[in-house]
Image (cartoon, rainbow, N blue to C red; front, side, top):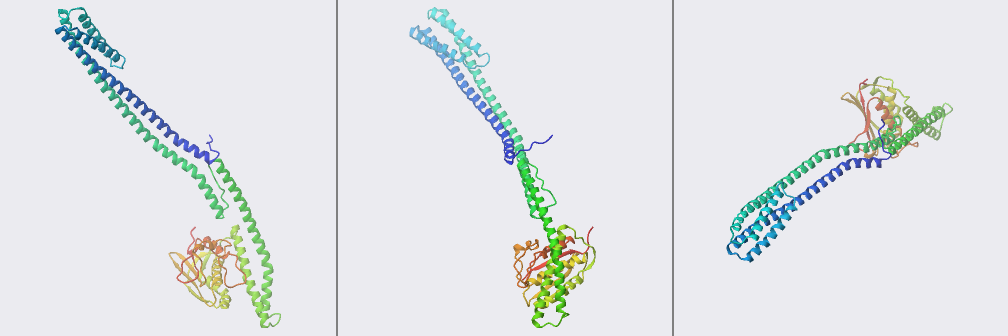
Amino acid sequence: MKLYRPKSIFRLILIGFSLVALPLIGALIIATVSVDRLVSHSQHTLVQSVLVTQGSQLLVEAITAMERNARQYQVLGDTVLFEVYEENHEKFIETTRTLEALELAEGQHKLIEDLRVIEDEVYVILQTYPYDAPETEEALAGFTELAQTAQQILDDNRNLISRGFEQIQGKAERIQQMLVLEAVALVPAALLLSFLFAILITRPIRQVDQAIRQLGDGQFSDPAVVTGPRDLEQLGERLNWLRNRLLELEQEKTKFLQHISHELKTPLTAIREGAELMNEQVVGELNDQQREIVDILRDNSIQLQKLIEDLLNFSMLRSRTSKLFHNRVELKSVIEDVLDDHKAALLSRNLDLRPSLVPVSVDGDREKLRILVDNLVSNAIKYSPDDNPLWIFLSSHDNQAIIEVADSGPGIPENEHDRVFDAFYQGAPADKGHVRGTGLGLSIAREYAQAHGGDITVIKSDRTGARLQVLLPLEQTS
């Protein structure tokens, strides 16, 4: 079963918001309806309780007043008193009808009906017989039963009110428990859904960011994998197209460097050989001006050959055709050979070389390590002012060989400590030299250091100038 994937990240956000918000909105609606019903029921119960209580009290008062009027009438025989009794009788009848229209407890309608029957019998006797008749005196005894029944109705109504408020309290407690359970269930669920959708939303964005970083770092081998909304997947497809295009351009660039380096190397060899023959005066003796020109030709041809070799080494690194041939290599011997190759440059610039070399051997490729050291020394010579010292150190510590090269030049700004190892990056121009470098020397040095399991970094120095440190493991781990 294929999972549903939104077409856009906007739709994914909308779905996530809906799934998180809808349960909370539903719970809010349920809580609102429940509380509203509770309030309505409470109001209705309160109104009914007030009306029933008032009716019951009026009923008791009416019976008391009728009994008082009837007894006064039976003693005095004043017809005015009987008229007052009749008025209270009408109030009694009206009160009973009002009570019957309300929501009474079970059995109270029967009690009210009994009240009406008893009171009606008394009223008929008082109307029929004289005030001093024995029947009249006997009928007055019915008021005692009326009072007791009315009091029972009042007590029953009070009990009914108490039970009603207990029911309201019970409903309120149940609603409170329901709201607590909803909060306990929905809040963690909402947080979990929010976390889930945050992952679903941010994961493709992180994948796009990772793919862009890989392209920026020149890692074109791994395809960009973006899973999520369709629009971000399409962005991943475009990044893959860009990756393939950059890979093609990188291959074309490497091929171009290989071809141009090879094509330049053949005529350059002839130029160098011709300059050497002229310098050795094989074709005849040279005057001072001619010798100066020959020296310029020879020095610049050597420098140009160095640039071409850098291009060739870089193209081999990019094409991954360069392999290490491991042997036991004495680094002190490698450094001394490199320094001998640069003896002429050191003398021409009157640089004070200050080596401090301790015998250290590593497992590595001698030629690659020679190129590494040569690039560091060449870079230091290029940026060192004339008549200044240049330091090179070799030591070992914690199963690592340490090579450091320091010059007296302008140094490397701190914000460029990492960039100087990027291919084709060039800092400030050197004070000397007619041919500017390619910006590949330090990049190649780092590649060869990392190929040996080590690294190269720019470290802080107490002196002016740049100080580069190479760390190489003494033994290669399989």
